[in-house]
Image 1: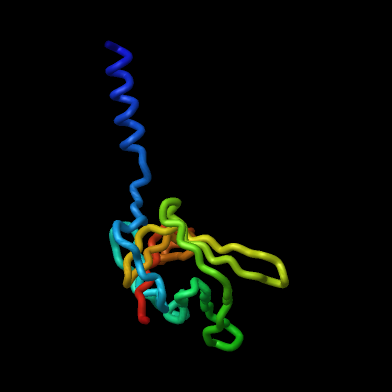
Image 2: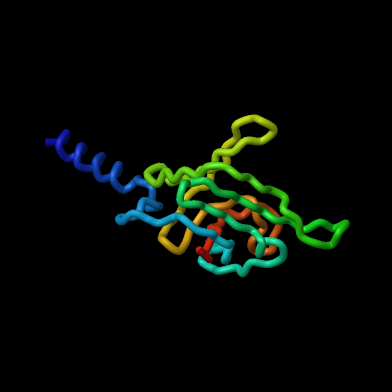
Length: 150
């Protein structure tokens, strides 16, 4: 009897420890399009995109080729420039919660992975940890919300 009760408890614990993120949609998602960074979500608050982040984009073509561009501010020129521009092939691994871009840099195969928090036909929700979202120094584990502009 103790073994049965213990088995039920252990099964409940295993089920409750599943990943809270559910990036795998119940219906197929059309990822084709251009996604612009819309806003950040951190500690139940929305943070508007400011500065050069308004130029960031993800492009996914129907053949899964595409681009990831990240813009930064240059103090010397006092303007934005594309700091990262990776062209390659996108791969959605929804069961693993990943959106992956495979590309070449200096002739070498490279991979850029994004933790996928949510996905729909009009929006990508990707986890980031390298932005100072709330104005306080240090990395923030936030969600970057990308909206499809088509």
